[in-house]
Image 1: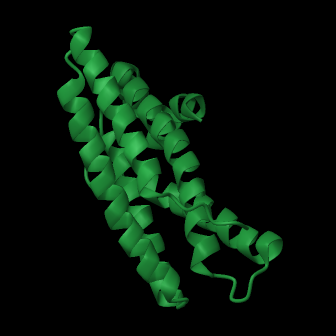
Image 2: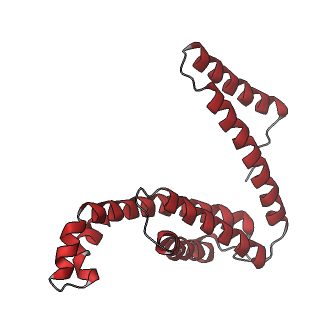
Image 3: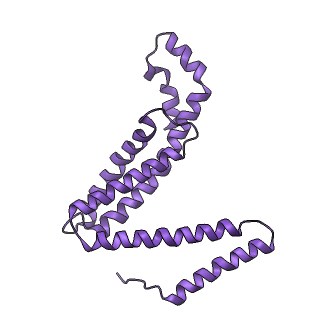
Length: 184
């Protein structure tokens, strides 16, 4: 695989395009130029920091570092799932349910792919494990966030129906069974 090297000229061209977009926003009186420039600066800072972290992790091939990076990625994705909810579940459920679902699905598929398809030695080589897990977490994060948001929103809208079912003797699982199925 060939590595793409970005020259200072390439980076200058990208920065010039962002400045041109900010200028266009100002000319059209959209009011987006300040937030666009702040977002661009944040992006450069975040990518620089993650580049330093990945450079350090890629230099070491220890399972401990790869596991630590995977846990940090999982916790950040779990927070993002929780932040996307309009109506959050109370207690640790708001964070734990989405994080647990992502852990089971993403880590299973990632480990399976690393063992069976990629087949490197060691199987947890960071250049493969971290990007693959990142792609898995990104995809599952969106799906789980949508499902949990649908579940909590529908449960809130139908709370009177759920309470009636509970008063009629249904268990809590039976009372929300239709809502759970609909959210999936």
